[in-house]
Length: 376
Image (tube, rainbow, N blue to C red; front, side, top):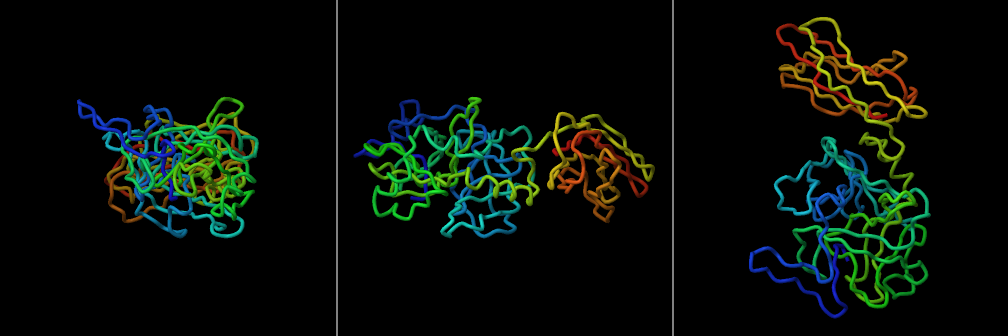
């Protein structure tokens, strides 16, 4: 299967009728719709896959959902809704894809990261399991996938629970599973009866459960399986804990914002006027409560209002005074600088007063620092 949430009786697969009021009936027998905000990190991808927000700018999905590693502006991520026709959805284009280098090998690794053009302000992220402590029990799956094998994908986000199936039982379920990669894949589903599974359209979506602190944590990525919701045919999921280090390293290289271990963001939203062809001005954001040094992909999100952004030179000043150039002056006549820069500040201690320094290098135009933030 290519994956999508499907919850059907063993011998049936049907979509519910439309009610007298015109509202669609239950699209999946035995399933339930997720409430708005219940799983706020869920992502729908335009190629027909699912995903989860790993950081505010990176989506974790399946390798088989994307092409090769490299620049990619063809994917749209939809976030913040359970109804795909909800006009309040946040939609952001991709800029780059990182596909696991071990996918398709005997090591396994059906995972990928999609970098979005801009961070999504206020979006919740889903932490990934870094140990095998949560790789058993009962998991939750969710998605907008087909109501039956080969069926159409759906408008509303659905959820269901699936029980863990141990590796040996999964491998022995049939010839389809004979190549199961024990360290790289987790199986889940109703072995005796079938009826609950992922199916076409949920590929790349998360399988998750509560951790010891009763917080959601991702343990799997929808990968593949033998049909949908069949008895003795569990779904197969990428075992996220095995690849957590590689995923974080890829996130650092992409500059997609703090994954696990990041500190911040620390924000200054006070306006600072930028004088015309004058002295540099600074705005300070003080980091506290962090440990160790800053990330190799420290994120500096800036919102600067200026009618001729080519006039501006922008630097990040570390607490010890070290300067990191974010932007040089140029002939760019566009308005404003609203973007996120990635800086390798790993030689700097995180805690302390970080400053955004801006200087207008040419006459005739003025502007101001509206706000900025740093995630270390």
